[in-house]
Image (cartoon, rainbow, N blue to C red; front, side, top):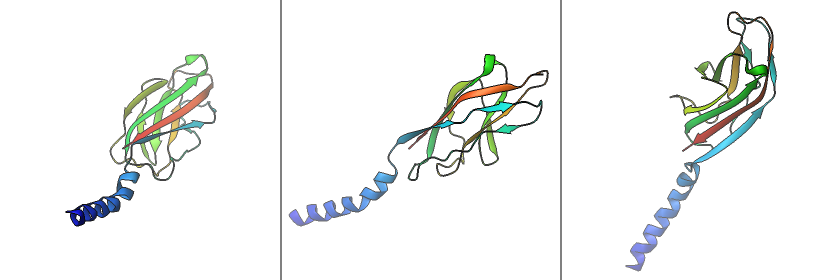
Length: 130
């Protein structure tokens, strides 16, 4: 009986690294402010990369503030896959195919009809993984 328990204990120890890398977690990154000035031209924020060992992305959150809360077209992007954002803050399920080891960045554009540049501050990304 003791030998069987020892074998199970050793087998369980062999699984520990797998369980450790699959542990849920989250990461938050602040992104420097930027200025969106030309109608129809996309402006990208600085890219930020989650820490090594992050698991499979589960949810992603964002926050930013546009001067005067003016309207902007906004996306959160990983490589060329961009998700439209509905407002200055929110959360959504991580898009299929997003990876925790790949940089994220915001993309903004002045919508048609806007004529003045907009300063975007307080940019923040929150990634949750499983």
